[in-house]
Length: 313
Length: 265
Image 1 (spheres, each protein chain N blue to C red):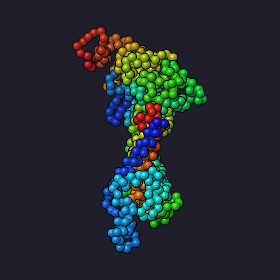
Image 2 (tube, rainbow over the protein chains, first blue to last red):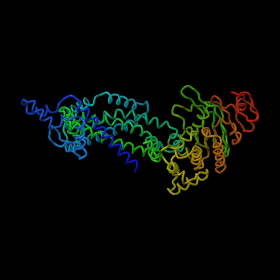
Image 3 (tube, rainbow over the protein chains, first blue to last red):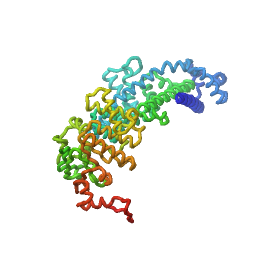
Image 4 (cartoon, each protein chain N blue to C red):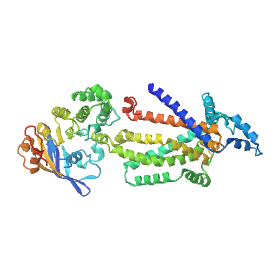
């Protein structure tokens, strides 16, 4: 219980620091949203109009005052309004987040469906053809940019074969190409990681002991070696989650998939500060949550952490 | 009656011969010590008996018989009925005796389930009885994870596990090397008691001649992959024939005589 409280405090502190840093960097970056906002109608704008809007949006206040005002509203669950759509940012995020989560989790599912069997087979048949094949797959998967792979998939499945939709969202089929693209790119790393981790586990003394006890090969592999080899894989997964989410941005833009990634790219182009800030906070929250799950999984995988009060977790 | 007979065993790693022409015979109730320096092929020999050799090591000639069964011709699936049941092992590294994230009880249960068709309660009571036999607080150890036990406790739990199915042959591969000398003495004492109870044959791999003198009735000396001398322990230790055995005996640090320097082999 005490631990949970500590975790919650860390989370709040983390979000606070994250919001401050992103706020400062955003304002320091060149570009002016006011010009974009007034340029919409393509009529000439006067300096007075610009000044008036700047005042209205509080851009002429000192930076810390601006941040303070944002923070006050944040604690009232108000992330401000988008400059472009005039919609509340929170509402925008709530509309788009489920699509991005669906894409993220289906990509992760694709990644696991590829990485788990191939990584396992590569370890079991070390230096046999399946291992070489997995090495080639990893090399290609890691070096082919995902946007290009996405384009190839579109060309093949949508244009030539015409069996899958190339863009947009709606049905399960719409998810297939984007999550395949992202999942394959991610799987490349995990195939090799799982393989080497499994080989390391299989060389452990406790595996030899388990064999000496007469346990079946299958039992030893799944209940002793595989579980042991998951710890490093999950650790890397937690660490590399940020780049996975960065990957969703590219994929969403490529497949015109309306998630938060696409939303934020448009927001960045137009200097739509409240949306960018909202996106950063959402991502921060998401990453922290996943890392929390990663920590929880350690407690299951290694009882030592659970029983020693989690000081290693 | 001979439990284990090894005849003309040669094991190779590619072109390199690791052990050559090994001949050993262990009878019921025997405690045979296999001694020799590191790298002399003791552990390779003991691993080959249970079919635990790494894939790269090949038995190129000779045979290993347990009772009437030729072990060296068994397939992986057939092995399972011998490993853990007819032949069991105790290894040097007690940390590696148990899988770190499973409780001791779960591992006992897993092993018993593999070899027997007992009910769950029966399996548990068997395990507890066995842990009790090796002077461990059975209930607590049964629930514990390996990291919660001391080295001596782990090695005793390993002995309990190795003897629970009353194997014909118990292979103890340097079981005390990683323990302090007092704990080591306790562990070996315990092993001797277990042997008396089950009347199994023990193949004891060690390089500590004091333990050999105390526990083993027979011994064999290995050097560079070959057995250079074997016989009854008392005979070999009193009247060693081979120069290497003599050197080995002379190298035991003695508490009585004080020499300038320790004798090297």
